[in-house]
Image 1 (cartoon, rainbow, N blue to C red):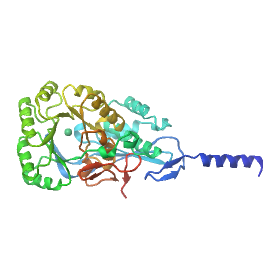
Image 2: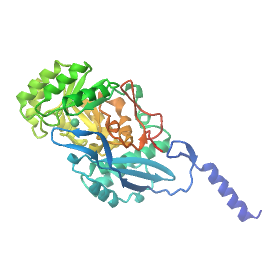
Image 3: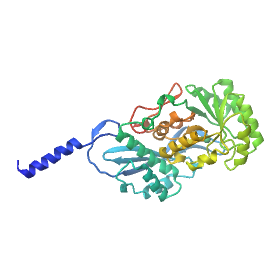
Length: 376
Ligand code: MG
């Protein structure tokens, strides 16, 4: 062997020894191949089919528009997702436009998540679901590189994850009874309110079960005296809390209600991102964090920490989503008082295996990253 070939051989063996162990998309340790050293973003639209028509105080629907995201780095794939229920103002078009405008290939280090968020905020101020899809895929990627799930990286005990509520939508009496039967595996029922038959709906549920309920009025009560009367009535019927009782603009009236209500008042539509938490503290007892509002896991974690520091209750929610985004949210579940993580159970065409509900409790998978595997 001449000197040139010897040096080449030595360099190659040194590279083989130094080659870091990474994890495949499925969490299996693999030798890295095809190192690109760049973040490669791809995405495609995916329409979620709902099992039941989704009836809220203001509208009804049977599908949810969604965009699935992949970020590849050095042969490892991170999965992410944007779900766009119409009232949030995002669409397949707006998400696709935002993602197309991103140039993630400028980032050679996927751990610079703070910088990547600053960059996304500089591209457009809103587009929160689109940003969440990138954030979730990045967290999945980083967790796989580190070989750990995010609850571990955050130092959380998965045994502290609460039960999830299961939503009973507004519907005809016989359908509500059937939904209560279907909700048998769940320890807490979430009741959507804000129409004229609110009490009737609770009476139907109470004729079937005495399990605790939580109530989401979706801004449906615009009279503060009526809202207070409902809070008293619900507190006598094993209700845990009331979410967004009044329109988000009625801050003074909500603060008035919070002073008098026997039940905690939780903000949902009122808040989106981190700076909103301090404003919420002035009128609400707690906040409902959702990844599609918070721009993903990075800011959702900060919101939970800040809310705790302000002495507030924390609830973790989701949209109708595949198990991708719901399992990503579940990584935060040990930090919260109440979880409402049933979005994947409400759709008929999931793409991932992930979060499980065991004895009614949120159970986080033992997998690196956000904890999902694509279904075959
Ligand atoms: Mg809500």
